Length: 104
View 1 (tube, rainbow, N blue to C red):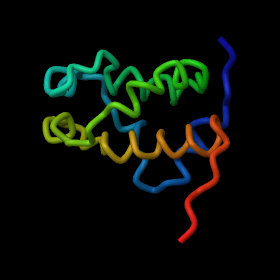
View 2 (view 1 turned 60 degrees about the vertical axis):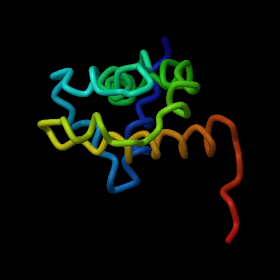
View 3 (view 1 turned 45 degrees about the horizontal axis):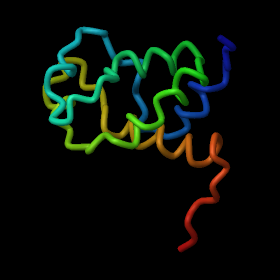
View 4 (view 1 turned 90 degrees about the vertical axis):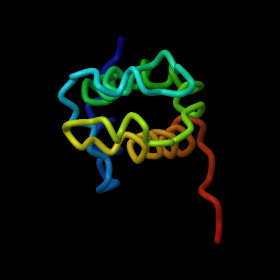
């Protein structure tokens, strides 16, 4: 596994990205209405460790999230899970898939 030490910093350009606030308690895991197997805390840990490859391996799950915030409502650390997922989607679009941002 290759480490990208700039991954967290690039995602943290968005002031709402607060994955480092995650305390790995697991409160978010049982609430996903889709039962997405990727736990937010695991995904955020990949970001903090700079594991770009691991993040990209989970692109399908990242884009499957409903952004319903059920997991966020139960988070005792106040992690902005839905906003973090949005930031990850933007990162994947912009840097991994090299898609241009929409004009307008």
